[in-house]
Image: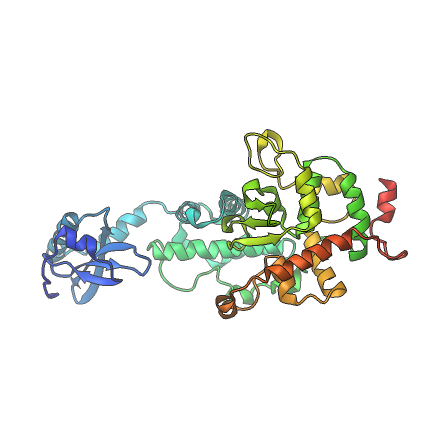
Length: 408
């Protein structure tokens, strides 16, 4: 029998903050567990037969101190009567048909708030709908086996390896979630790669070459930019700005006038709009400022490059510009061209180039001690980049797009 602690009042319980178990008295073994994250829940520690047991009684403050005391007393009475409340709870839970599909949807709902955008949640649901549910979506989550997982991913492992890898990882996470919810017994996760599926499937590197974004050669940039500046439309202006800033399409399409300081020639992108989740400053070259000065401003929207209905341009707008120009490149590929130019045509330190691209530099320790974003050096770099693409290269160096330009 656990030692009975001094009874705490509801106010005293509310003031508890230190992570760990806190005995609250009144009922032997009743505790408020506080996790490092701050989450709080009621737990009853007691003996069921000859074994120690911990019974969850609900979260705090949704379950009050008074309710937790009542639940704890009822549980102890049931134990004295010879029943096992935990076993009854598990039996009751398994009577509900927790199929893999239902469990996966519960996982998505539970984690949606922590994902960056709704599109990620949609991708989760869509890939499982397409590849996992047809094979074992209606099967109880406790009965999903390695054979089931292989049935879902093996047919696409060699032809759609990136998709197959994501599906495997998502199945693994759903099954881990099922274990934590006591919907599935603990043990080897049948979707785990290391020491499991790696014996049944070839490594991703053996079946799928990495596909890089199509990019223009460095010396093709001047001729391309001359053509781009003649193209009309907000998509063309957004693409030109993206190239001048070596920025991602999404960062440019969501750019707001409130983020741009024309006097300081700086574009400050907030963390939530960055792939890394960290705020990023872009040094604006003279050419980038000229482009912004020439843009119209529209009432009712703060977007720099608004689309129809004053909404952000779609993710296909910049691609459509390149297709109309008959250029074999992607908007993201110009970042690769910029990086190649930094390495091959300038003496730019790698860390400056990487910071210009908003890439993390160094390991976690180095990042923790780094206090400078090398902004002034990046300003010089972006000015050099703008001048480079405004300068016609020596005769004979241009190749990639001249033929297509003549045909356009």
